[in-house]
Length: 220
Image (tube, rainbow, N blue to C red; front, side, top):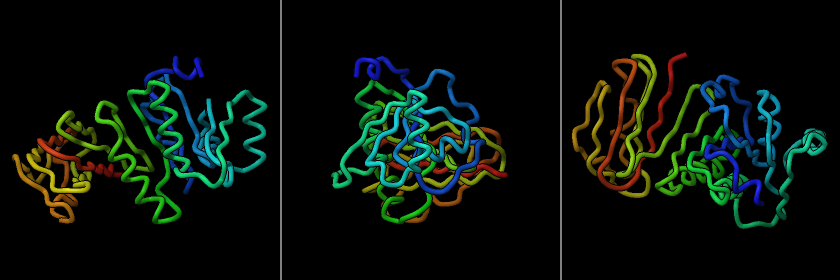
């Protein structure tokens, strides 16, 4: 446990689900701690990412991949199958308990709809002082709240959507998007913030109150 508490501030969490494009590794910090959530170990192996810890009930990871990881010195943290949290939440909790101030979550967009929705809400409601990004293929998802501004780097025409989480989001202001918002309110359940577009190589989104997810889909 002491070694975990001295891990780098950036934790990369790899989840199970569909395969991901190795391009998600672009720009990852060299100083990082990598946690695989159960079959996220298989995903990490496929994209060539070394894993420090595997956490979960180990009901979906390939047994051979898990055995080879253990032989290579990867720590295995096993939980009972009948548990009160998903493997991703266990991985997030482990990272936060170890002092992470930045979470980069890879994968977890395929498979069951209930897991996808739960993963989305888990990412949206991480502690405000922790920077979070969720990457899969060409898409990056980040929470925005009154304590942070989401800065985007991409190309003209990239799709950017702003989705309120749990309640209306007030004071939404954007720069560098085709349809600009200036201290606007986006209602929870409304699709008004869907499918905006970047007009240049950079853009930003900020809010004054509550939480929204900023979903950036890069052009191929």
